[in-house]
Amino acid sequence: MRANDVLIIGSGVAALQLATLISRDKNVRILTKSHITHANSYLAQGGIAAAIGVQDNASKHFADTLRAGRFHNHEESVREILNEAPTLIHDLAQQGEIFDKDQHGNILLGLEGAHSEKRIVHSGGDATGKNVIDYLISNLTENIKVEENVFAYELIIDHQEKRCIGVKAKDDDGAIHFFYGDYVILATGGCGQLYPFTSNAETVTGDGIAMAYLAGADIVDMEFIQFHPTLLYKDGETKGLISEAVRGEGAILVTGEGSPIMEGVHPLKDLAPRHIVSQTIFDYIEKGHDIYLDIKSIKNFEKRFPTITANCRENGIHLSDGKIPIVPGSHFLMGGIKTDLIGRTSLHGLFAIGEAACTGLHGANRLASNSILEGLYQGKKLSQWINSHAESQPIRELSKPLQSILAKKVVLPNIQVLKDTMMKRVGIVRSKELLEKQKNWLQQLHLNLTELDSYSIRDITSIFMYINAYLITEAALSRTESRGGHFRTDFPYEDDENWFKKTIIQTRKGEVANTHEHVETALVN
Image 1 (cartoon, rainbow, N blue to C red):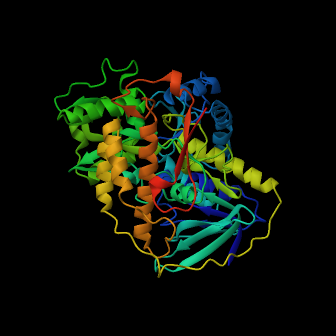
Image 2: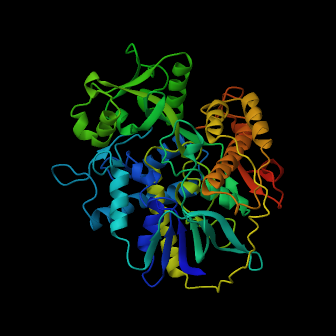
Image 3: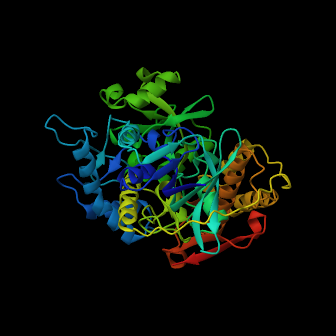
């Protein structure tokens, strides 16, 4: 039995911020399915949003966040996090030379889509995520143990005490391990790998959301998937993100013939909210056009965007041509495990932070560069809460027989088939016909969700992806309107009369095996 004060699954910015701020008299264990840096946070280029400019304030940031989220946001969460943003930036800046500064020593501020002011803080130009993660890793102390290549796949629930007490996990050899903790935190990210075109790390497959769902936790707002407008596109594949900051510096979206595509679409043109830009690009691609980012107006592009420059060169894109081929792809999940601001879920003892969680900050469409901000906020607030709660309940080691030999395995379809059907039927543009087709296809799989021990890590990952796909599809079918990242051709407008501020909560009920038999969906104002 491996007992811990704090057990964290995941290694992104929220997880590491939490771990570094936990009191040193508590032992902390971080489990990560791959290397500690193989997470979305490490890939983040855009930066961190905070109202620290002379002309800026939290009220403006608040208004921009609500507009981008199409007013589906939880306003108290938005206000709390954005009010804290300047302090979070100040604290990091005081601890180390992380952020880019001008010649006078002031933090440089950039502009991104749907922001009314320059308020994006960067580190190393377009290497913000990497630099912040590297900094947090450098601050890990002796009370924090990191275990890499450990795949957590089942929450351990003490039904007598009605609380989550740990996780079951597999190592690379398939051996099963039990990890216990007074506080169990899921910081596993979103589920971007459900789609063939994505900016997400290969590890981001919705594991924490699936685990929480299987354990009976509330899942919310799964229909709201953000598709980033500009992923580098070469030879039919996406090759990484082209930051929104590139358009913030003046790049525009054009056809192969050089015609701008955002003229007359939105007052902010190329810096319109992401769902509008992504849908416009998608429409052009559907009509047979190739779409590019025209970067000719950006001076010193290679110096301003070194990470993007290196990626383009690696993939044979000649920046001297002045244009970068792009497609939209899945980028961020606004929904996830329903939590309060510090990460408490509907299950006692279980917490979720970062993209795996849904605090209501992002509403129906995340405002650019609010994600690392949320991770920093939740990591700090949860650490403060844990540090101030001295309660430590004894954990009973539960003897759960492994039924792997008796379990009947399910033959799973190729995961690429799932990705392709999700893009075609539950992607940027949706309809009742396509959503029902995907739901019926997923229902026919009859996944065994009660006995995962006998499956390989690869197969469990696939099962988790199918679970997330079903949750997204069902929620998307239920929401009969278009809002934020969710666009339906049969309901092309926002329906404030029937859907304003209503959330879709999905909860597993009972022990039946098939996904479609045990999802209870509730609409909550």
